[in-house]
Length: 319
Image (cartoon, rainbow, N blue to C red; front, side):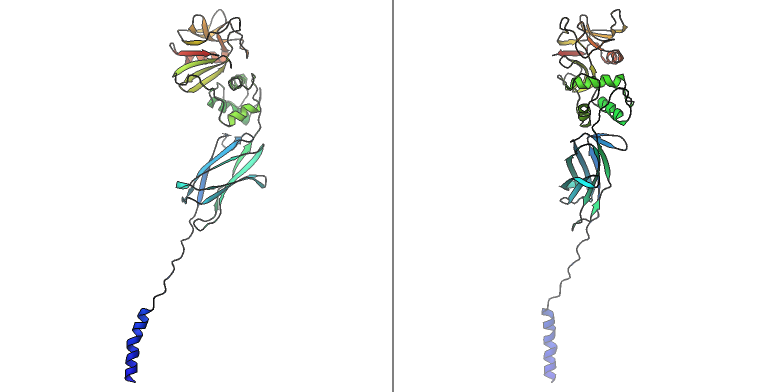
């Protein structure tokens, strides 16, 4: 009996030592929280609303924190109670994301970005952001947001206009210059195509001499005068040049004389570039060539041009 007890005492620890311990599986990490912020690119905006043209592309860019590249976000563009657009994109390095989509016709859209719950990140959504698709037109005497945004956009594209929210003669002259520069007819009424370009941040005059530094350009085919700083047009004006019987000269010249005020011929604030040819204000500036060879500009714009031009600045006149 004593021998059996001894054997059991010796063998039992060996058996226990050979039995592996059961490994404890560590709990899976909890999904990370998430928050996304974004901005809208393009369109024209007030403090309360951003406006787009029909069928315009909207660009939405933002960032998720914490950044988990590969996670999927979904953008919903909701019109009424129905999602009119649904776009999915993966989060990129640094948590960045970009959505692009085209709006439909006029109306209001509500934008929201959502993330469905995944093993790595919890479900979350952004706050709603409203945009409005508009098919605007505007003319003399009108007031309001659409006129104010028109004026701001014209000025940003380099057209001389007041920014008051009231469609006055100065606004009409800027619209006329814009339409002439973009070959949209020769009228001071802001048609839908004018808004369509401005809402897309387009319509600035394309300089022929972008490397000329500070200079002036006159485009005979469009009948516009442009003051330029390097590659960027500073101001673009409605202009009327010489008739076929008394044509404006073409070529490159430099301003050599400036005479302020009004002379005996009714020329206002004149800047001469060769012989008697000058840029000057005049009472009549139609949308077609009508001068004796000079470049006529509206009298309210003449002093702005006169003050900007310096003796020795080059002017390029071309067809």
